[in-house]
Length: 102
Image: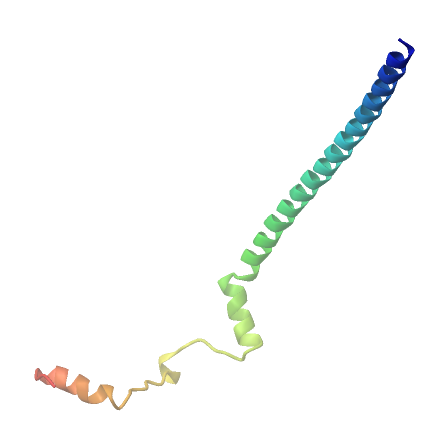
């Protein structure tokens, strides 16, 4: 009977140690999950902020101002417009205008 008691005592001790280890792992994993959730919320907020910034940077007025200031571009007017035609397109256009086929 004494041997059985020692074996049962050892089994209870091993079971208790295993239970403590499982509880420790459970708490550690819960803490990691909580940190990951907080990080996900922070990243989502940062993404939203960056999207708002991107929309603000891409407004047409800002793009036009940068084009004028940094690239020395100017708005199109009929006085500065140049029309370029291809030499291959000229015969085809004149043939289409006269009604004949090439």
